Image (cartoon, rainbow, N blue to C red; front, side, top):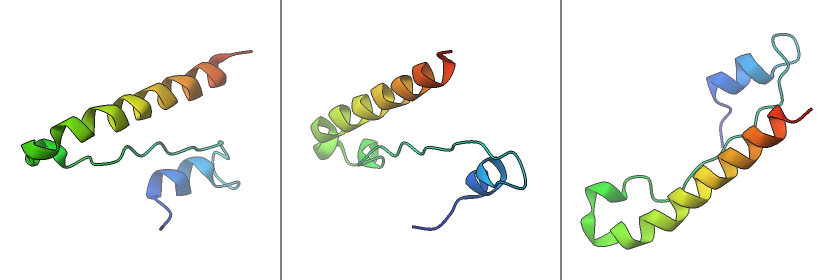
Length: 61
């Protein structure tokens, strides 16, 4: 996996040095293949839940 530009800027120690975590849902192109739609909802919900967990952990004192 290649390093993304946001990670380079946000996570690099010489720049902002933030702890960057990437949440990547599976099957993101499924809306273009309706037959796979039932397999799309669970991974997307899981990705949203994980993003909320990370946001809550980041906001906690």
